[in-house]
Length: 414
RNA sequence: GUGGGCGUAGCUCAGCUCGGUUAGAGCGCCAGGUUGUGGCCCUGGAGGUCGGGGGUUCAAGUCCCCUCGCUCACCCCA
Image 1 (cartoon, rainbow, N blue to C red):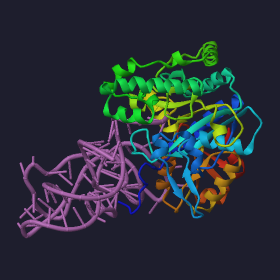
Image 2: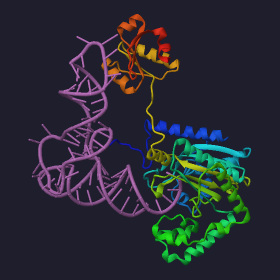
Image 3: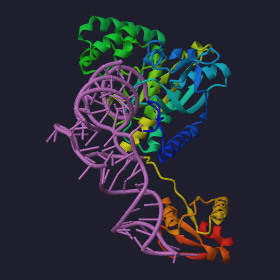
Image 4: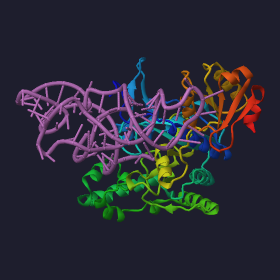
């Protein structure tokens, strides 16, 4: 074992996977840009207070934040998610609304790592601030949906719910507290602890023993006022119009405290229940105001890169591809010609690699083979003297030919 | 935070039950067979604090304790 390894929950993304990540983000950028969303980058670290709105009662804020005092005595934290930082940015920069942005990058939560969950985990994220038009909700969901389609995932399902206005949500929460307290004997021990902190989240319990109690619990829909009911109905009408299939899931509450009204989740079809959430999001209409900005509605979602790539693996789509080369240069005269030819061909737009360390021709040819390049360009002492190079097809068959150095790039580009 | 499984070569693993030559295999890597041509084949080579520490023993990769790490699940979440 080497002296240093990656810190728990952190890992190296090696070739060719790192390039797959890059293409994943690029695919999302394309889908987002096609819908008028601009790229945004916010700091990896914020004042810890920025994240308080995520939920004082949530595990994320309670015990999972990388939080510390910096050298200037400032209370800071690595972001555990994107939305709070985006709202802080909005409150600080006051951009023109609607502000439609997307982000990609790492987030940090101090949790015990397991499959599909790491302490440093990447997400892609999309947010709209400044409008509570229900068709914004529908558009946001549609962009996420189209991204999954773009990747080729067939088994993703959309769960959607509305938590109502804050006051309705609060009334629902009280009703749940009463109901679960009355039935506390039937609840699992874990759920009793959850009940004390946040009755809403008891609905999220996946423990089998809780299922009967949860089945009989009050339903949020009974608490909707006219406005929230109409808003939610319009969101669903928008999805219907787009032909996006969804399941209204009255128990879907999601884990972050700031959600109101529309909430949704993209569930993978192949992972087991505990980690099948590929992404999720919802409205957070009060969050910008809570961070000291103007009252501003907002909605967005985040998608876990790891989990979605696992889903891609399971469905056999969006594979990792090795680096593809056009040309591999073999030079047995010391390597100076390979240096010159490589740069010359690269300038002509070709992907070119070469061997180093003045190895034998056999060794260099093996390297050329392994590289997967379509052509080997070979220079020995004869070619060097004659001002030529040998062009040898490596994959498609055919004979090798001798080409004048001046014609090399043109010959390879055809 | 709780519980299970696992740490032996770059990778995948055997050896551990029942302690006993110099710790092995496949793949990969390097070189040669073929002194200017890859893939297939053959030969050779490099590469190991057996995760770390302590203990038992004449003797520990193997048994015991501790510890670190990885992994899977629970909780929670993306």
